Amino acid sequence: MRVSISEVFTSIEGEGIYLGTKTLFIRFAGCPLRCFYCDTPYALSIGNGTYYSIDEAKTIIARKVERGTFKANFTGGEPLLQHEAVRELARYVRDELLLKTYLESSCYDASRFLHVLPYIDICKIEFKLKDSNAIDDKHYTRLLENEMLCLRHAIASRKVTYIKVVLSSLSKREEVEELARMIFEGDASKAIDGFVLQPVNGVNEPTLEHMLAMYDAVHQYYPNVRIIPQMHKVMGIP
Ligand SMILES: Nc1nc2[nH]cc(C(=O)O)c2c(=O)[nH]1
Ligand code: SF4
Ligand SMILES: [Mg+2]
Image (cartoon, rainbow, N blue to C red):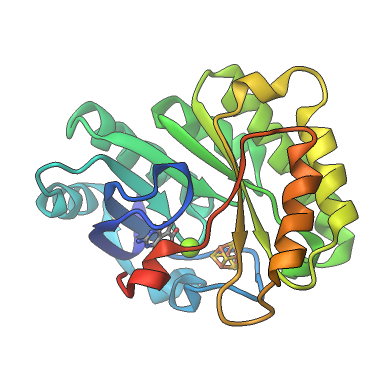
């Protein structure tokens, strides 16, 4: 088996509920989606990464781990595109390097997600809004179904599980409200460790008023909602 990796680097976690933690980023190349705000265009094509054997990838990762690292972030691109390799490398990072594993995924395929889940400690489940342009309208419902299934699987496996939704000036309040309603029906709110609304950076940035309306749309179902930008962009670091 070979794996295409875009980059491996240590930085400060710039997103989500573990913001500020020293993190080893393992960026897998390739993504089936096309969000208009994508900030890793160099990782969209699987052919743009460097191909390694699994043993070579393990060696590179082991060499890059620095003292005091809190977790390894398996990101991309879309890591589930190479789910077999991610499973093997996550197992290695967790069981042999003794680091927490964190999956950063658009959750486009719930069966691939289930395949890697046993070796993942922390799941960031991203829900793509329609204005992301991630996928054509015809396939949007299927994407949403997979995201929702991944969320259920992560909760059922008692992982640390949180939600991210990227907001732009084009995002619709009704859509976010309906999403929150679907996520929190039943008793899910106790099992979910966070809901982060992340404003886009650079293009179609939402106004304060717009962000607050989105906050309110989630808050009625989940009072611990947070609006958090990508802090690594603010800090000017990778
Ligand atoms: N500092 C930093 N934090 C991040 N959190 C998620 C990232 C990603 O690209 O998935 C990322 C990233 O690329 N850099
Ligand atoms: S899912 Fe992530 S990597 Fe893929 S296009 Fe969207 S932002 Fe870029
Ligand atoms: Mg990213």
